Amino acid sequence: MNRTFILVLLCFCLTGLPSCKNNSKETANVTATASTGADSVSVSKAGPWVQKGLECYGIVIVNFNDGKTIGKSVKCKVMTVKPDKVKMKTIESVSLMESAGCDKLGLAYGDTWWETEGDIYKTREEADKILVEKGWFVK
Image (cartoon, rainbow, N blue to C red; front, side, top):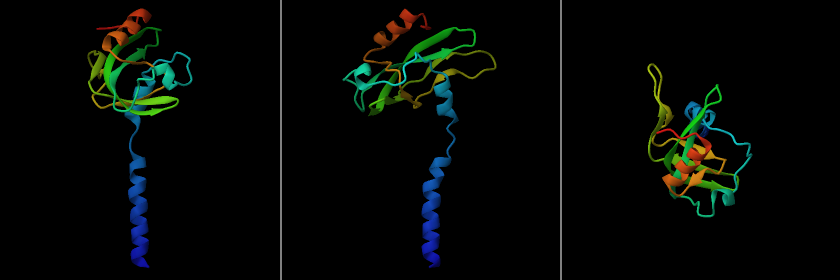
């Protein structure tokens, strides 16, 4: 009886520990994205070519309090495709800007996010073209 209780307690603790991780990095990525008013993305909006394991390009943008928006393209990999969102993972680091006394503003290699806007492109040129058209592109 005592062994059974310890085994059940151990299983409960092992399954509960992963849910206690710090999600502040993912939260920071979400707050650094822009919203265009779309509530969800369909696979058809992103393109029927979007599949798990595909290397493609996304855009990273930041909205400042003064209304200015800047952005860069980032090479990423599709991790999961759902009807209303796509899980993306960066396979390169991208920094939008740095300033004295501040951390880099951007994404590090391996960061993940749920793409809900449909901003997934086959080439860096396509992603950069969108940023230029919107006036958000920075080198």
